[in-house]
Image (spheres, rainbow, N blue to C red):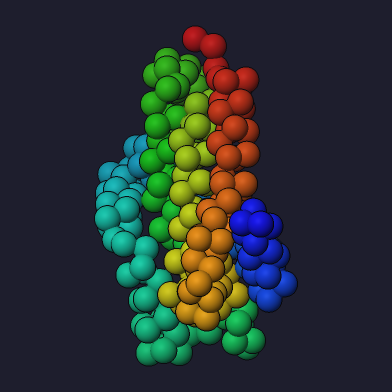
Length: 231
């Protein structure tokens, strides 16, 4: 009977709330933020290894500032500063605007970690590779694009996977900018109105994130082993 009652609690939660839809919002936040963070992080990594001192300084400053700034503060700044005070909107639709603000906040924060992950991959590339590229007349950008980054990405798969897992969990902070349909907002609402189902509620969301995170960890671990550059 107790087992049947516990299962019925789960069923009641899924009947009353769109739990799957909330997780889908977080998945979308993660995917879009991962894309933009990868682009920005790659550019920052190029800055960090650039022969131009000012670019190295800019890349280092960005990483140090955003890695040491809590994500909640970044999200609050986007809402209270960029949107409320500066009146910068990314969409005429209210919900879409906050979704995009959340993507911006997650992207600029995660890009600093992506940068360091890629730079760790660059450190696995023997210095002779860069010297060989220069010896055949390649400048910095062609050498980075054709020689250094392809090997660096292969060496950075594992740390990039860890960053993606962290981003998946950090997507819950989107509630700070008013994304009311994601998991943390739904969790708060469920606890407020169904406090008697506390165990079932927490298990629902815990299992949901386990299902999201474990495949990413397994996939990146497998890829890092298969694509590792043999030295």
